[in-house]
Amino acid sequence: AAPLVVAVSTSISAKQGLLIRNRTNFEGARNLNAVVFDKTGTLTKGEFGVTEIVPVEGESKADILMLAASLEAHSEHPIAAGIVAHSKDQEITLKKVADFTSITGKGIEGKVDGKQINVVSPGYIKSNGLNYDTDAFNKMSEEGKTVVFVLVDDRLVGMIALADIVRETAKLAIAALKEDGIHSIMLTGDNQKVANWVAKQLEIDEVYAEVLPDDKANQVKDIRNKGWRVAMTGDGVNDAPALATADLGIAIGAGTDVAMETADVVLVKSNPKDVVSIINLSRKTYSKMV
Ligand code: ADP
Ligand code: MG
Image (cartoon, rainbow, N blue to C red):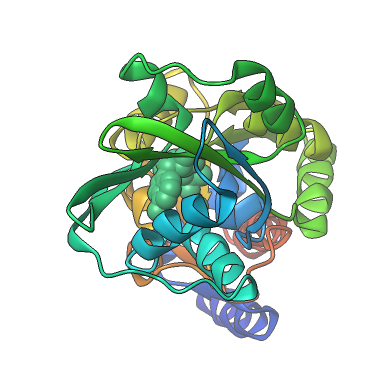
């Protein structure tokens, strides 16, 4: 009877948009007691809109946006899409970029008109000891906005604040996990204040912020070493090692190919609440087996 139950669960899961790629780890899902979520693109939609441009000195907002968008046109990050879309709204003409590179988990760099341009995270600014308007930064971050910094030849010229949209379904997912006695954790590369703001909206139990991509997998390993049986849910290239490290790796369907290829389960509908469905389906399927 056992294989029949498994076969039935496969067709149920396919109908619900749960793509099971690794059956052994799916079977183990009934024993999970913690779920880790990436923030951007997983708990949030990853659809950023620019809300503020704050010049540091003489630069115009239009120039700051032009420089940032020229570089971001070469990046695949959700932040990049937000900045480029805003430059289009403002009918700003972008410039050619030379020597474009991304600095993993920290931002991007390249040359425009022979000048070195960087669009980077608060962590990058702090580790390089650059001064910035901390009051303006703190205010925007505490409102849950992601702030990036624009540099010209290593001089800070402005800040760009972007707002993402928290998924309503993420809130339902966290609540349902709580009801099942499952611990919820956020793991993000974004700033601590932004992470705290999103965590508060979602009533998530624990938060790890400003985690560099290479450290996401280590963080999951540490959580496992504390005794948790953990699922990792993510969408990005930077989440793939963490997906592979968890007891169950879950990819958001709208995410990157790398995440989907690494995951044990893909949530085709990109709905975080399906994490709960997976755990319940595993419990139902394998409790019927001896
Ligand atoms: P997350 O875990 O939220 O998906 P990432 O590890 O991709 O975050 O990025 C961490 C931080 O690095 C971002 O919050 C941002 O500050 C900065 N960053 C990454 N890529 C870019 C980019 N293309 N433009 C500007 N900033 C970026
Ligand atoms: Mg992400």
